[in-house]
Image (cartoon, rainbow, N blue to C red; front, top):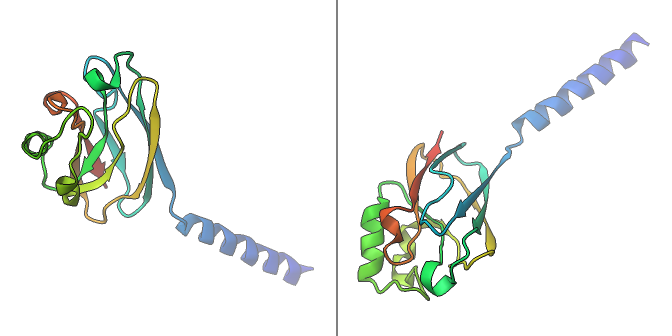
Length: 151
């Protein structure tokens, strides 16, 4: 009986260790509105873990006038500089993220109109630090930006 209890304890502890090692998914919801604001300005994730962001446009104005996207930038790229670069590359109300800029991006949503949402799934970078995010609809980068902190 003692051996059975010992084996059961070992199996239980081994199972706990396996689950403790399993990485979790960091889930967050971020919305953009008609006043060109993200409701979440900063959030934290764990390095090399899965991230799931539900991005919503909660505004009422038409997409052509107030569309929003969410673009997570690689480390060292600022939202302001990237927004200016997007404008120079021809970003517009139909295509706010030109293909030529995608090398600077970790993850990006499509341009969303009112009431639309999209889920972004990606692996957090292995390198710890601050990673900026931005809306690249023309002119929005001045106000619609935030920071993902990788710990």
